[in-house]
Length: 621
Image 1: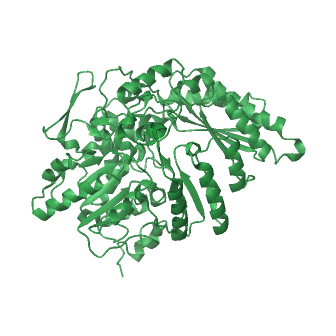
Image 2: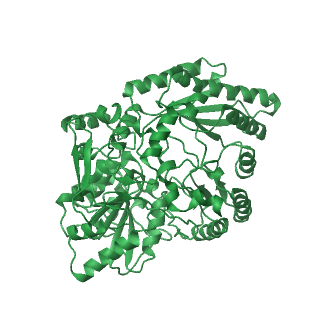
């Protein structure tokens, strides 16, 4: 019987003790292993347990006989305080043993607002926060995930990063470690030097950054001649045989996404100019429908979940969606399982499907026009017209829906007051359409149109990586214009408006496009009590401003400053598949308000064709 790392007394004191005891259905426990790997999600259990990437790597690592991979999540502040006071080291859920004794600590970087939680994990694990202060007895700390495409703001805290999809190079990485340990030649520095030669592995300490007088980067160079100057993103070219967790771990408490997740494809054909995922996960690659049917059946049986969801950036673009949905409807009816279909375009086919799988009275339809006016939708390459939105809404209202959610961004490049006012005007037209379309005696109450606006953050490896941002006050002023204009609409009683926090947006912008100098501020914030910044009740913008001031960092340099076409960005040493020439071309095309066709309509020469797979080669099949 395993001894729990936390005493009964502690577990009785804290919120949701089931977060920390492990032993969930399908979790993996091994007697011995040569390599111990802690897979960490730097947020609370319920969030981390919903993350598909960690589930895939957990399954893949544990298939190796020589490796035991365990899960670790950020302790909630109540337990954090106790662990600090009582000097209890952070532990793996499966073994309940301190992760400071493991070989590797892998931390996934899913969003910038979790950066202080990286330091929380290292601190509670009793591992030096800075890579340069670790000894040969400390684990190798590595990062991965979408934010690792600009690893520089957190580079000081990591020994290495894995750039791209984990299914391709982790075996080579772990085999190298095992061989060096077996030969007696292992030292931290020697291993990292050899690991840096594996394609996709980036070791920050082996690269030197120099800066110009204006603060921009002058050069980024390897310290040794035998390591690459460019780190190449790793891509799984054939998704069908790729490793996938057939028996995912089932959480003890309700997770954010408490369901079976079926990944139907990776990448996206659409090319929205603000969307980082749509660029870094290129090319679009589909999983064979027969494999998906097999996985759905196996995973439902292995978990007992009562819902299955399709995972994709744009599910409507999956070429065998009709066949897959027909199968799932039949399978789920037999098993009394619900189906969740996110990322669908609202067209006749999708609405017909959703009628079959949703309780129309309870559910709402979601559109993401992103911009209110057609002009601005063309700038961002959204490829969605007002006619698309109104036709979809009309069909939905006829089908029995009366709730619509609309997602927009404020602060997009070239945005004018006219574009902002177009947001409530579009909502008003949709509300009016409901009252025109549905006879009074057939209405299920009045329609509810919910508008939500976030503020645009320019991300690396997007055409908008050159874009400027604004002060928090300017973002709030734009939200006020929208809010005031909502009140002027004829159907304003049917419209509700929510907007995002402006200060969080500005900080996210600094962290997204920051360089190595930002690490000092992140460390300052953590050392002064800041973490769980992704949670509004714990976010303290004043502390961040204090940190930037204390560290001599000008936030405006990273947010409001115009960027020249030839500026070296902190992430330019990474080859993410899409070329900088393509991104710059798209940036200029955006300024002409011109739409670029999607990948199935025409190849735009983004660079992803070099991977020799996916949508780039569909015409040759």
